[in-house]
Length: 215
Image: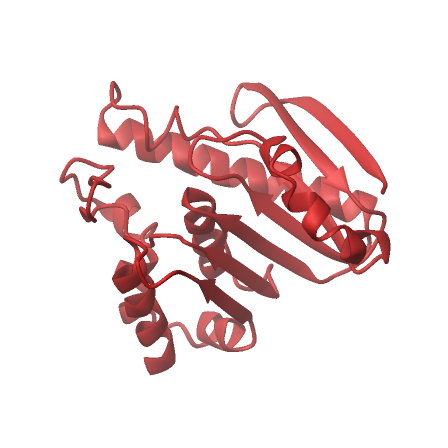
């Protein structure tokens, strides 16, 4: 299986960022790591091995990106505004550096965002905010409003609400989305949520699904 390692200094994040690319062609998949995990974890956990047939057959090309979760939502020493700002810088890194790299490597126009846990949040949120860039999103065991306490999982913004928090919580902004262009793009997107019935985020995921069906 073709495997490539990339490292470069990100001007948007002002730090070195690393990623792994698996495959040579097919749908480009931006694969976000789980909460505070690293770009190599999906390979170490044998997730890549589990989908290796699709990669080797040229159906998928997977970009395992790194995270800055410890610098954003899980930076308890930073003010919530700073956490959000760091998240937005990460979003710009994905949009303008990772996706640009993927376009240079692979001309396939079909783009998917996928992830597990907090990676599911990242995947779904970026796909919903920029539906004209993504054709598919897959969220596995994700929560889509980080400002809500869910079992042992706390509000990651400590009760802080502003415009940036609102526009980065799908369960908050989807109900009020009225832009016909964005709605049309969302309606043409393949959206998959996978979650266990005993998962702490089950109700949150079902709620987002219901919001989307209403649209």
